[in-house]
Length: 368
Image (cartoon, rainbow, N blue to C red; front, side):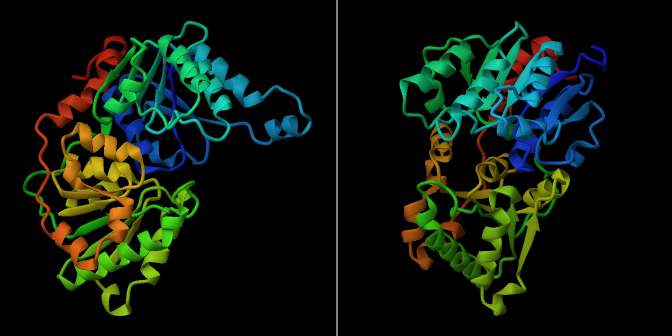
């Protein structure tokens, strides 16, 4: 496969998010002999600068905005994307919460449909399906997925909703196969991953209670002698703003044992923080996944069904805390639950997660 014109095109959520960035990096590292192209959206590509088989293609600025204002139906960047798809030996749509009936979902579906038109083998990997409401939405994605070479979902709830599509199969989230630190590495302290609920439909009313509960838990963990690190997974989705608000609730006397790690595109740095943690209190989905993959003590605040669905598949619902239960618990109850955690060990989870690649391996070659 030559570098020029024959690169595999990858469509993923390029918004400087730990989970999505790590999914793409995992894909590229699995096939170091394969060139991959993606169209950059919100970042400069520095995250993948160390991967010689990855090339970032920039969007053409401004032109589509002008066409939109002129009410012309054509979009230059969409045409360019379709051309890239046609030139690729295969295409990969990679990510988690991609297929939801919200906002301008028909445009998203059109872009997904572009990947299966024209005969290029298309792979939709590691998604979860929904939430959705209308028969039109379901039928649209049934048509798209039925034309794909392979579709993998990361929870059985998604598999059941797409049971009419024979190309769809199940494997636990791809990032369960990210390797842990060496057994000799010392693990200590607590990592807390936060999200911003204030701008999330149906969840904004929980913002104050959630952030107050998190601040109380941090203070109580510090009083118990723990060092706590508040970790942002995605600045563009407000994680850093949530961290700032939680920090503002923590008394000065506790601040000396509280640090922050704000993800800036350096995957090695954030993975180092997570691998060193003894305990991970996860709101971000992939904070839970990586905590389990690394064998930490893990508990989760379930702000969406995707986390609860994944825990049920893992037979690990005891790790989950619904948002109302977390906010409604007493300080003593929260601390007691975190203090009682044991390291998570789910035998075979990494190998099962690797099944997302099993069909793609047939096309690109299994790793050595």
